[in-house]
Image 1 (tube, one colour):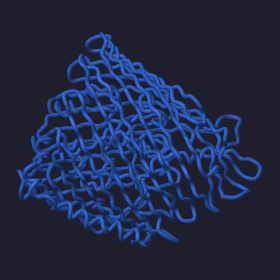
Image 2: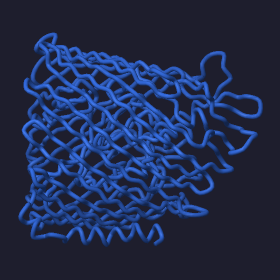
Image 3: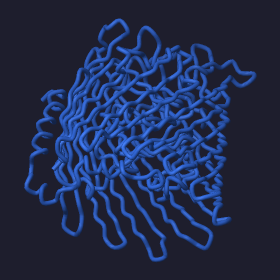
Image 4: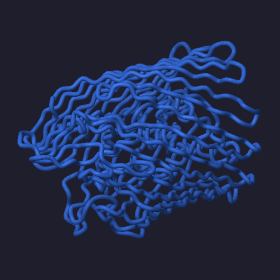
Length: 635
């Protein structure tokens, strides 16, 4: 069966899944989407501030007390945005830079250095790092979840290398899906519009021994994007994905097992580009007497990519990690370690080649963190990680954070950290073209890029209906990737240095119980240059970032059955290559005729027929106005 036909066949599976075991779904019915939405909308700002987050300290703590620049995208935020993919959901975070390059590709980063191949952002989905050793980043067209199952997305701007390792230089994104117990019953979703259509279905039930499970399937088709003159670009895509999750909880133990499999085609000349893969993860947690806890997690991830006349990659990744946390007097200690093994096999082409084509890579790490209660209102957190990689050996990643709570509704924090971006296969092993002579070559002496980061943040709730967060930051970079001219071509080198300085802030105002306003802004100043005495180049290739971007959102409940959501976002011009500034208005209307049924209509770029967000003119896609009608049934 052709790949595209198989992707469309997943729709049949979804439809079957949606009606399977309806009787069992009634017996094990979970709260409906609209019920869950109402419960979340009724939360006060104080209760929202107490949302538990994991990504700052690698343990549970309230958002209000987390000493970092962290923004939480809730599942309710995603539902009311109408987002159908992870990158579109990430637009909701004001501390992220998100630009759509075409139908499938996105540039996503934090605090600068944005690129379709951005390499300074660590991304996890339920604890599984979605990382390619080809360029130390994320292929966003390969990452997908059932967005209605996302509980929250924790977005940290700033380094997280001490706990999460190399490449967590400018930020950490942690996508966390709901436990299976919260997704019981049957849910079916059908949607379509002028640029995409798709279907999804999920069924959840009970397991012996107090466990719960869910299985899901989804499929979609996205139409091609267009150049500015309306000429179509061959980049339309079809994708199908299935997956499951099972959770068990005993008195002291919890166990999670989950996995996904996907298959997608992206149209391009001379033949379709294929992306497929699968993953399987298991995580066990035990809580001991006295409050100490242990966690062990392991996963396997397989990815296959085929880019006609460019390269083909088969990547298998195995990862295991563990941690132990204990309270001892004024100290709250956390320590652990992990090991990752990746086998990367590349089929080279005449256009480019990785040498050697096949590579086995290993990473090992150990970390410790101590949160010290200096005063009931003051905590000092010291941490360090040693991470070993096959290219540069051991890297030392320390950090120190201080948090002061002058009152129950205020927090001042400051931090200093060291992070590195370890070399990737591109840095060390890429050659262009695929056979000598090369005009661009990897450098087996390429070293890790280094960032020393300084941050100060303030979080406050001056009124019961108003809260805000402000952070100022300064990043000092050395040994950034450059192009060094040599006889016959150029090689990658570490010849660029510089700084980024900026401000990021956001706030929420509950005007009425049924009406909430939120807004956020990021201002960034980059100063990058070639180190004195070198003839290197490549500053522009490190990223393309706006000096300012801002967004504002309004969510309004019109009675019990109607929702009206409006979002306004502005992105300043990108400098090189030049991309004009744009302002986009998105809106969503939803109707709940019953507690089980939701009908919504989402419009994006309503007052702008098209605009570019990424790339050099004239060979760049322009993002078009879109409408999307969705029907979701839960029982």
